[in-house]
Length: 489
Image (cartoon, rainbow, N blue to C red; front, side, top):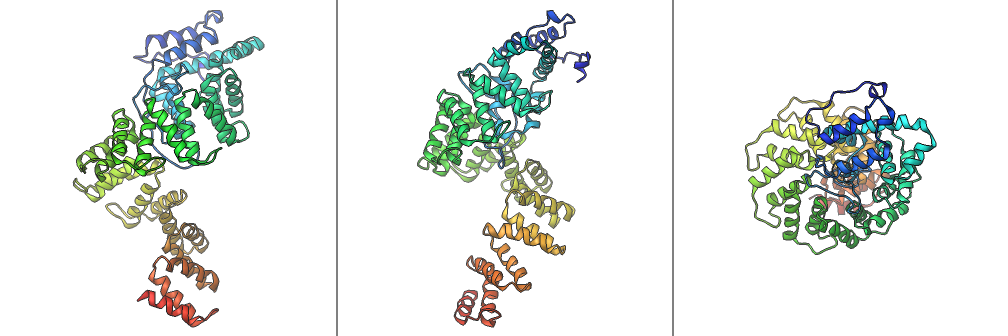
């Protein structure tokens, strides 16, 4: 870092005076005049408590991301017993929907002065590390300082990512009943970050802070019960913990709770309650709540159908970066549902959503590129987006990718993706896989997959199955031949 080499950046215009005072004191040429680590951390936490930053993210899915990230302007305290609020606490609250790069970007873009202070703290740390045991004793006596340093190591904020070091710092601070550190110890056990993965221990730590009224813990615990992470699946318990978080005013919890009522999970289905919870979440500025409220208006869930309101809500959530809203907005533009058709805008929003790994958007975008719908046909891009979607388990994308490989003569690639899709029950993939096996004289496998497809009503599969049984290449069975022939008629 240039700052470590003695170079000082200009103060960012508009930086709050309190922030300026902290990091300019850190620049003091006289080392003894600089604030101590504890003084900086205490003042930083005090300032963060008054921060009201906003994170724009989106729901996704797959992988370590266990929750739909928050996009909210609401001042949240993830753990009501902990002093941290604002910027850092929102990152913590949103951890499941953000990778390391996103967290660093969030800190940098949502509060540049906070990022500057972080740099200066790291400078102070690097200088005071030379003082050895005295400095170590100073930080170990302050759980806030241990947590903050662990946080930097965990995300690689102005330092290398050191998950093992982060875990040790979180763990030591957690022994002093530091709630946010307990939360991160749970996450480390959940993901195996810096420690051997142990879902039961993750559950134990998260349950502890949830019982201490930590909203982030309550959200996490609800997810653990829903997905059977470290505990037996229990939808009613999942509902219970999300309800607690919602009662604590958490916008994300209200949106999740709305989905429980929408789908009748852990509670009796109630569209009016779902609508009201989505409305509350949306009014707080949570992008997924806004998107789900749009869904209610376009489908008439708990309210009258109002496509204009739905469009406006999807537009608002899409502008906040919500990938589901972006996907739905693209569909509206493509179909001209309540508005004029606009393929260019449809493609724009499909791309925005697809870039955020929305697999349906990726699949639809691939179709557009393959068919040249309102855009120049581009098979390479079609394959690219089919593959992105297929890798996320989209069965039709897997089938389409297999079809593309087959056209190009890559039979091994085709078989691989046909199997993926067929294994998920897609009848077209089952039929095409059977065709390949039949052409390769693997009649047993051909019959197996033709039958799978035929049982779903595919007439081509029914016909081919009848022919195989009638001709008796391996197995002659006129009764079965007649049975499947009758299904074709």
